[in-house]
Length: 461
Image (cartoon, rainbow, N blue to C red; front, side, top):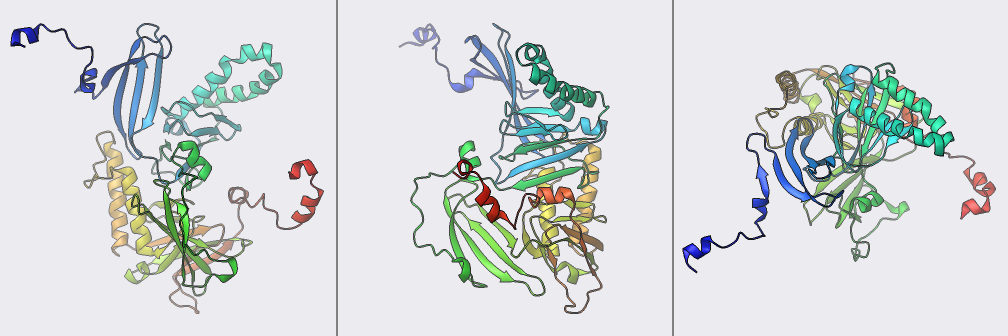
């Protein structure tokens, strides 16, 4: 075929995938044709990769059809499903809280705890607290005329809730509480440097097998189980002996092993060290659990760190323990970091590394935080990490407090059995909120046998 003949050939109806996408180099927005689910004509989908400080990378998608004018927007995480799920709780007290950024993935459930209502799972959103409340308000109020005719009882029950949502939007209902629970860990409510443990909480939790199935990452239920694994009997666990248990990797959901060892800490109690290593994806993690009964009161331990010797003290932070230091301006909430048995220096190093990975890019060693982070915020975080580094290196004296409602945390006493002047330990009565969060209000240890006998036969099935 000659060159002239080649030029006169009609253009192929098939194009390379790269030719179907248009990219605006100035804005970074990519556009491509896609099918409209409303009229089945071709519309346009626009895609933008966005980097959010303190959170990570997002994919913003916007679809618009020029034929039927149907529009749709969604937000998706550009990262992987996290190792653990995450639940955020925020007490909204002022206008600044109303303008906090909220990222809600399509697997997350957002609740207005004050009203006992929730926004069901749906398309992902990049919005604010005000935007979330506005969406719920419009969704409920728009269908009220129809409910009044078809379901008057439901209509009347929703009237006070809708009125309360309106007063929240009018800034007349402070304070109120919202929560955001996402088993993928990819949702988020923006923090500030002024938050305390009573205002803003983040709790990481391991997903259940059912949640992994729902997310499509569960292992094969028919897979052959590991053979030759020695599982311990309840009455035969020996201190210092390592036991291997078959489990499901939280990262890739394939079969792997979790090693467990019981260790007795002098002047404290026995603890169980758990370590998981996956030979398939390389995932590794370790955690510490304490044994024994539920204590009547919580425990607060305050340590004055004066020198490098204090930084080398053993420290056990259970997964129910909160940690804070006014000098370092550090607050670690229960559930964050999980259970850890390390040194004071090791714990501060882990806190620094995890925070740095959240505030800045994982690969960002300069601490610039990206162009979207305000210069004032960059300066605040730079001062924060400089102060934390000084504490880790022993150049800064500070006081650190562990507050554990289950009394399962511990700081090594260098003067034991005598009193260590740098450690202050006190018992405290758990709050109703702590009792509720730990599930102790629903726990019944006496008389449950009689309740089971009195339970109707149809409920026992």
